[in-house]
Image 1 (spheres, rainbow, N blue to C red):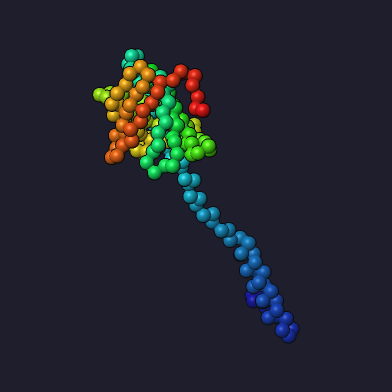
Image 2 (image 1 turned 90 degrees about the vertical axis):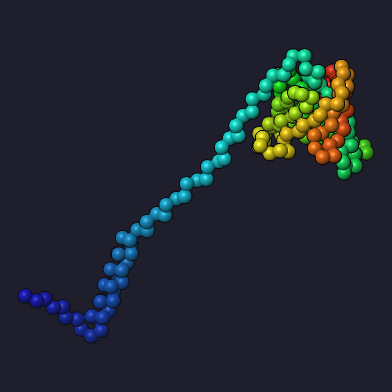
Amino acid sequence: MSSRVVFSGGRAIGFLCSGMVAATLVLTGCAVKKPQPVAAAPQAPAAPKPVACTPVAADSPLVGTWYSVSTPHGVAGNLQTLTVLSPDGRMTYQTQLKIGKRVRPALSESGCWTYADGVYTMQTTASYGDPVDVSDPIYRNRYQVEKIDGKHARMRELKPNGQLITATRMASNYRLP
């Protein structure tokens, strides 16, 4: 048994084309684009390992609040520095730069400090309250203490052409001017 469809004139081609278009649309609608695998969101870098400060000797001559004024190499002004060294090994370090009558805040850092074999070391762990990369050498400062008494400390940076710094012991509530 055979079935034949008879169309008159060009209508057969029109229906054939219409059928092909309809079939294409149906198949296109069924074809679902596979979702592309989404790349895993980049993970935030691991939090820096916290640095634990080590208490210093209770009678350490550096414990206290120290103020210094220096003129760093290549700077056309005075750098005023206030450093607070606590017996628990914590420290805060604030600076401001005075050029003429203008005073500009420069740094506000905190971290740990040590004093051993005549070398005073500051390790910054936070700058303006934000954690820093403690492996970056810019956050570690070392000084050879040349002289220290109850009121003054004189030390030199341990780097080529290290600057000489003379600090004065201040009251614990002293703030930068």
